[in-house]
Length: 353
Image 1 (cartoon, rainbow, N blue to C red):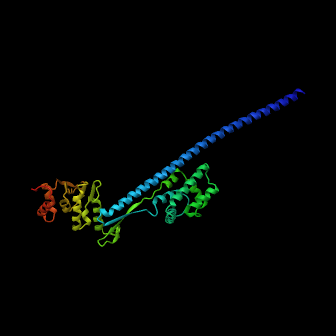
Image 2: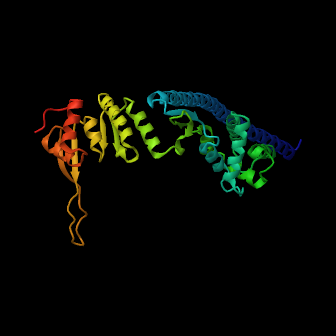
Image 3: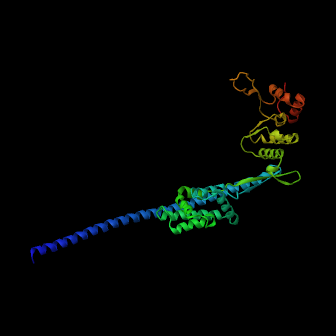
């Protein structure tokens, strides 16, 4: 065989060998990339599992805290009647359209060109909750599933047809979102927006009912100002919480009610600190105030650039202090005689001079 033929065959074999080496290198590189992707996927799967476990734990804790809060409100409501001499009733009420629910859904519709989105969201949620109290749990679960599907697909810019159909089928009961709106919702699915949905909790509150002298129930806001004030004052004074500060309680009360309130003041002040701002000396004297501070207005300076007159301290001391007694008797009906009668009746202080 001629040299050239042998050389040509050798060249061909060398090229084939080199191609095999190159192919092997490519396969090795692809294998390494696949292993890396597998490791990343495994890590992501593990993180997803931990995230799901953390989500389940957080959800259970949220439910537990919500249950405790509701029980606290129920217990507090149950005590209202006893603490108000049966003039008030209380019950816990859950908002039929929790603002937190609506806010979370409206955030997902931002920029979706859905007209009257807040009103429509409100109607949708309200109807859903009315027919099924657990509807919000179902809605939030489906939104979470949409976000999981988006994440598992690698969060592409556009949703696939199947995911788009699921989004359209969820909102407003299905069939009311355009493809543009559904795509916009898809783009807004994130840790923040989905987290807001999952953490939305309704704000339960207490509803008060006033019971009049005939035993008739009346919505608290429809009771007179005097009825409201007397009932709330009694409710507050029968509790043994922290310091209670009340400004001019006599404004909405007649004298008979004031005398009832001062009796409560006398019994309550041994359990808590009471601070009253009042123009009614009966509250001070009959309530057996331990410390009395009287104030007086400052003089008005006629100069244009002068400061406004300031309130000044007139007296400060115990109720039996002569200067305090004089300040009280100056405005008390019956004057000093009435003061001394009340002092002897309630046995406070020493003989005033």
